Image (cartoon, rainbow, N blue to C red; front, side, top):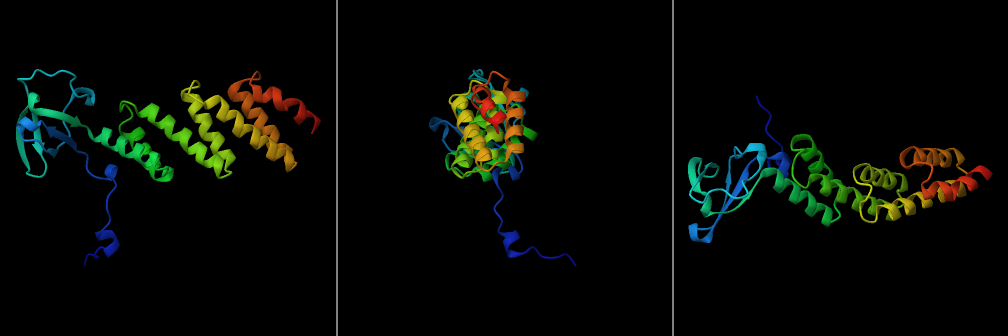
Amino acid sequence: QDEEASPAEATKVLRLFERPPFDRITLQESAGGGAFDVRTLDLPDRKVPAAPAPGSRLQVHLLERDIDADIYWRDIARVELFEQMVLAEAESLVAQRKFDAAYDYYDFLHTVYPKTPGLSESTQKYWYSNAGALFQQGRLVQALALLDQVHQQNEDYAGLASALSRVADRLMSDYLRDEDYSSARRLMESTIGRHGADDPFVGKWRATLKQA
């Protein structure tokens, strides 16, 4: 006999990326309006045409009604692709500072939809914002690791240089205060390895660390 699902399992609400993929079509008010979930669209490279011929049609399968339909492009106000909706939800979680919850969304996108427009920039913002929260919590090692990830993708990210300096300085100060010289030396070596010996952090702390 099959086991029945527990009440918790039966009422579990799936996160967006856990649902079967779908796209969403919103119609012009002149065409009746409304948003409709459709089977994922067969679009080259998953890109919505920038300027489709108004008289051409888009073939869709309406999920709620379970029927096929042809819709004139001129009647379509907006097309939202599944991956774009997942990204929007991830960014909403980041805005709410729910960084742990956002992680699974970004992991899904990088694994399944790595070419999603704006994904790289959004991920950098996620890492940077999360690093700021970790810094405030005193989780300096984790904060520095995230900032280094941002640096690997975009070393010109706004505010990154000062954030890296602030976190690394605090971490080095803590190591020296606690006389944890092995960790301090590893931090110095890793900084040189990632950012070079000319990094301001290296010049600031090298002499102090030698004396220690």
